[in-house]
Length: 527
Image 1 (cartoon, rainbow, N blue to C red):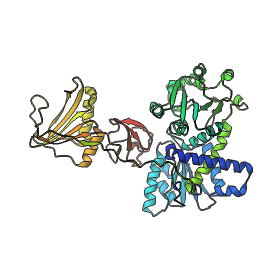
Image 2: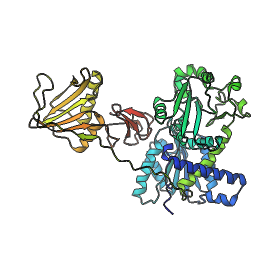
Image 3: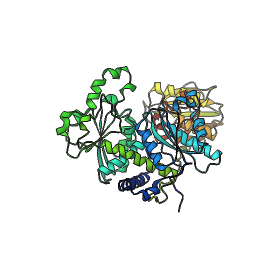
Image 4: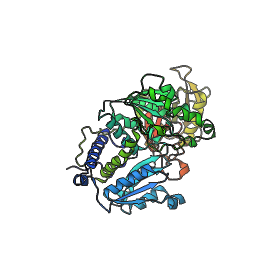
């Protein structure tokens, strides 16, 4: 029997589990649900961790009832040691770092941490820190971190129970899904997890129903479209019901208007009206439609009013009950109790780092030309050319200032903006530093991160001895001169957690934060 691939794993975002791994989790959940219905106590034992020394710790830094109680009941099913951090008395509130708190608790034989926080990317950071802690202290298995909701980022365990529930509704048919996402799509982390989560279906049609003030952030919609989802946008339920292609699955989220300031509160009633189901809509709903909601509903302003509870539209109650079952299986997997029989049909190929520095022919000893009238050719030094090619002059000048500051290109020389000879009217920036030494490999990599698209010319004895074309690296990390600009990200300097930012390239000029997944242009990340 091979190594259990789930043991010691974390679930920080839904994409941490592959499609095959999620389908395996759903199959085990179906088995568990059937055994509970049959009250088959003997076979249920195969699902239980049954170890009073196995520590599960709930750390809810934001209030929660359903998720917290769901995990509590799932842990009690497993008969494990369950603890709860008293946040009101926690040292986290006394300026202790997250790393110190969780390392201490890991050292007390706690194996799984279920964490809800206002800060985004906390579990990703704790997963990385926990692996390092385990390695330093000879722990065979690193602690697992399960994201129970982080800010407006993701809620992966809610996504697991939602996917399981949708598959039940569709009798296990994964060929296609047509779903309407309704409500506060801007703050709704359960909706954000669906960008990746809905790939459990081969064909996906998503209808986004929200007024502009509550619309899904643009980068999430672009990600959906890039995955091949058919995406349509509507400003209200009224508008949505005014056309013919109505989804059979509606997923509501609670509007979190209190997070959006006084201007939004002034029009709160109008915004709620656009995403609240009304009695007069009943005869416009196709037969077989089911409504879902991650709960809780707002008692004064429910988007799914109570009169719907006793109708066939009610899918949210079984959805909620499925939460405990999915979380029982998830805890069984990360503990290693379940998963020994999992076999992956498709293994993800190991990613090879793409080259992002290309050496190009500099010409046979040609002398660099004059870059502007009155400036002599450089005998020795460096010239960085084609900076921000195609941008306007103001943007180019501002970014050259960043490059000089970050790369510490102080001293004699100059910089200017000129028009491209290949495309007249297309502007580009140039920085020249006579006498500067040829940069080492790490400096060149940093330059590629801050000046992708530029060329670096190393000049010696009046000739170009090396010419490099730079592209944005696939990974940018361990640079103190940069930061994620999301103030709610665990890596943001304001939180003083000493988390160096890490970014992954998603296009020629954009990066995604590895913690909170906010998308930035390469210019924005530099301090």
